[in-house]
Image (cartoon, rainbow, N blue to C red; front, side, top):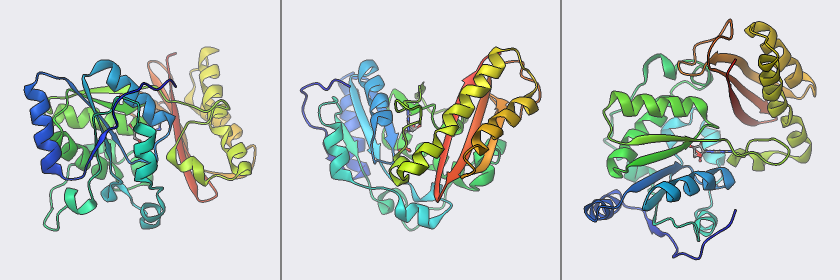
Amino acid sequence: MVKLQTPLPELITDPATIGALIQETRKQGKTIGLVPTMGALHDGHLSLVKASTAQCDFTVVTIFVNPTQFTDKNDLTDYPRDLQSDMDKLAGWEVRFVFAPTAEDIYPHDHVTSVHVGPLEKIVEGRCRPGHFSGVATVLAKLFQIIPADIAFFGCKDYQQLKVVERVVQDLNVPIKVHGCPTIRDEDGLALSSRNVFLSQEQRQQALSIPKALKLAERRIEEGETDARTIVADMRRELSRSGALHIDYALLADAETLKPTRTVKGPTVALIAVRVGSTRLIDNQVMMP
Ligand code: AMP
């Protein structure tokens, strides 16, 4: 991607300070784009930044490894963190502020309130990671308060998360538009993810069966197959080919509600979560029959 010669983003860690800066920006009549991330930035994140700078006057990137969305404490401890490298990656992308608070800033010791999103937080990925989407919904509800932006940018890569955010914004009357951006992939088809750094060369090769299985599902639907069980069996066969992946789920669901599909009729999403060694990867593909 081509970078522009623009000033470096300003790093803010204090919620009150970023809040005041955002109010000031709003008073000037500027539109604000928000890009929430957990850092370890890659071109997938940068595509959201690009979408934001194209549509908004000011872009704010948040970098916060949100403890409440981790069900596995080791996963939280091991999550890649490198703020300086992230700041370097954001230089030249027209980002005005980077908001990188500490966990104590966001969750003071007397913090007790959390947001729940009904059945959506319990199905598919939520079934594998109890509490995960409540943690996501809670931190985003807080970030939307701290940084009242015009548009918030999210990747379709985390499809269920995108649906959760849409639900939160609608149900809590948050005056912010949610913009879903396409999944950015490496040339070999693997979706970019901060967790890909944990994959060995061999594991990376094995992980390529994820995009292959998604493509296969798409092809089957294009060919006119409507029986979800048949398509899912094909996806699982592709994922099992290397014998090295543990499939957490591979399924077809309604693209809006994420309820399981039996017969493909309308917009459908193929959702996959696998473990390659100790690295868990998720991916998806939205399809129209
Ligand atoms: P994360 O830092 O993993 O929480 O991701 C922050 C945002 O970047 C989320 O909205 C993700 O969906 C988005 N994102 C992560 N990977 C990709 C990707 N490969 N393509 C597009 N967006 C992505």
